[in-house]
Length: 76
Image (cartoon, rainbow, N blue to C red):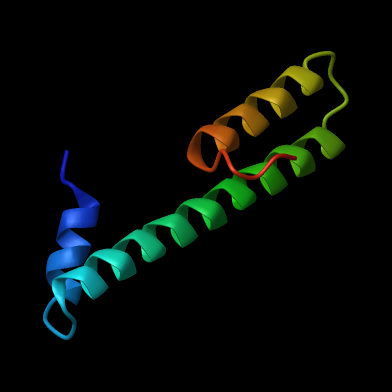
């Protein structure tokens, strides 16, 4: 698996110092992870709201747990 942070650092280092590039790479990755986790949370809630089966709460909890793995700082 490619180290995305290292790739971003390399790409961003062209116009920045190595420290600035590393910080920018971490910021981009953190922001992307947060947005992805929020999208998963919203999707899990929307599916829960449309689903009337007995298993809907388990799917909602599973979606929230997946989002928490991606972005543990945010609790829903």
